[in-house]
Image (cartoon, rainbow, N blue to C red; front, side, top):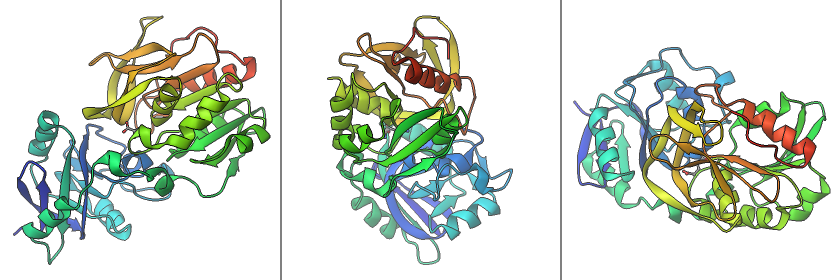
Length: 355
Ligand SMILES: NC(=O)CC[C@H](N)C(=O)O
């Protein structure tokens, strides 16, 4: 008998099995990643979303915190065809509702056809379809989470010691841990700063590069990070990943738009326009850069031509829409971090290398 319900904005209610109890709501998205569930569930970019795994069995190799990308689970709830007990217990201990034993093929197809949509979940002994529908009614648009940066950013600055060869000022809009560790492994001291840090605090650090992290929600709501980039562009080399690319594009007069169901997975093909090389990339985003403003698009998604890499002719800027740090996913584009630090050293971006 069902003890969990998932109510979708298209009016349907799915019966399911409760694996971690609770009631919640969020924007329903799916990832096609077939491994890396620990990394995905701890990726802050999933804040305020409900994450469905299209791969049917989630939890095959247990749960180990060394694979976590942050200190907590970020989606409001998780859905799979089947979760192992390890994952179910982890999510329950984190207070994050989880449900399985429902047709996730149907959910994924609906999101693909109708786009990311609001959903409500009720799971546990007292769950009812009405409770799931009530949650659904309280669900707000992603773009209405106006201060989502505050939910995921560090409150206080801190430094990840990488040996001091470079100084990176990294604005934490919901950073995955692998971004700071990828930079620190390459000799950079990474000064992680709150999402609303001011320009003076950044310039006091005299960094070699200003790096804007990934993060959840609508890039238009990260006004202070955008203003920071506007102020410091041309003065300090700039880099960004995912939300970071979107914020940088907006700061250079560009624009972003909501995608239908986004890119969430570990096998998104990206072509470098200069070298023609295609790499497989990890992605997790629901918005894209519709207009790069004064920047040039250097890489595109092979499936839908969306902007995957931006650079500037005038000043040192390099950004990626995908996740070069992988985790989960392929390591094909790890050299992005070498390119960023080379740019930091030279104060300019040398012509694109294949990454
Ligand atoms: N991973 C990210 O940084 C996601 C960026 C943004 N929140 C989006 O959904 O497009």
